[in-house]
Length: 216
Image 1: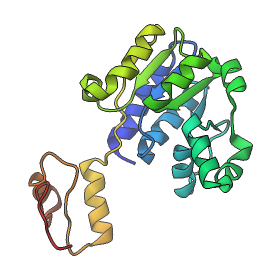
Image 2: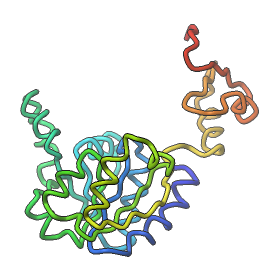
Image 3: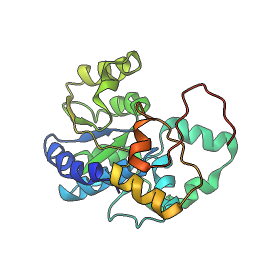
């Protein structure tokens, strides 16, 4: 758990206190970010709603399921399961599934951890009207062209958009602890704007530039 994630849970919880229903816009590829939303939801007495991918991430990490947490399958996830006959995925979460009629009925009790691709479905259900949404990713993404459709949906539903960045990245202290625990022969920093600075941080980092071919 990174320091940034621990600190942002309180900020996110404060943002969740407003509105009748809250949607948190976040990628569910980062377990720390899911954990932040779950803990913030518990602080304000609401039940978190994850999608199938987020639920799979949570279970794979062997995390204890928070009381009241539910799982909603987006339309594209249901179609993918049917196409691939991967029904074991739905059986694994059967006891925690929430269907759209219950989600609409209990909207004020929930925090929906949503992808921007699911906003049209939520709009069709009417749960976005006058809602509050929390953008927990980097705020710079909001100015990208890819975010424009999602922002249009939020605007036309009168959604109040708040930002509370819950980092999905480890802090420097945790990176040092990870390297010390694993004792790898090589450390190659990725997904960073300052790969050379990692040498000072970790001592034995081996930076490579984007597009550079190297032997692992």
